[in-house]
Image (cartoon, rainbow, N blue to C red; front, top):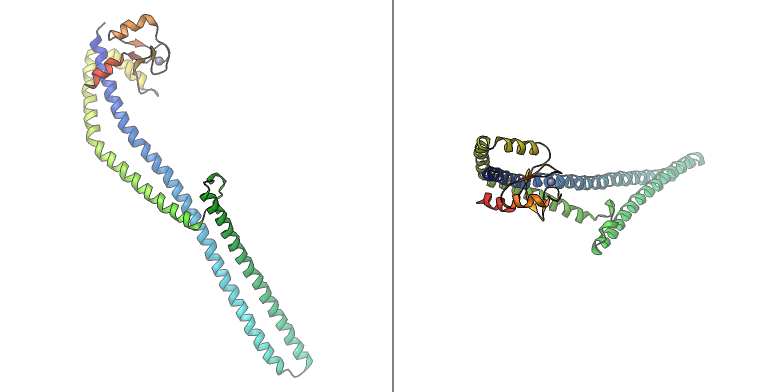
Length: 266
Ligand SMILES: [Zn+2]
């Protein structure tokens, strides 16, 4: 058997592995960035929702206070008119109007109390959340337990992380651009050589890699194919040790001695 042919193929696998290592390094980051951006959007929405509630409360409170102040003004004027009432009928009519305004005030005050209670409740829930954070009991936290300042801090942290990861990715792309180009050039050259010297091996290699398998050529590891861990028959070991290859009966990968990969690196 001509062992140099398999050496050529191992060299190709080594180069393809290097490219894949670089790509996988980049691949991880976009996914990480996506996940962070989702968290960021979620946190942003939480903060916006809380802001909206606070604004609504403020507006409602202002409107209710205006109502109360209007009603009080009216009551004052009705009371003044009562002192000038010419008869009981006129006086009673004014009393009824005063009563009506007083009811309006009472209703507005109830609503003001409701707002105050809601705000108090949300503060208490956040206090509970702060306590859980202090005790590292994050799994017991609910969304509304997250204190406002912690949520804001989370938003800032996430923003910073996204920026950092984006910079990291950009620098990897820039840093590895030359290396990727160089590797691609070497791969093209290597393929050209194998095309001439061992076309059938290259076809086998490409066929294996056309599916989900990237490592078409693998090392013999503990007397097994390191691609699928199936044991390699003992009578094939000698050939592998001598620098030949074995086609795994289980996964079809090309199994070689690890020495060949060490040689391919040089
Ligand atoms: Zn296998």
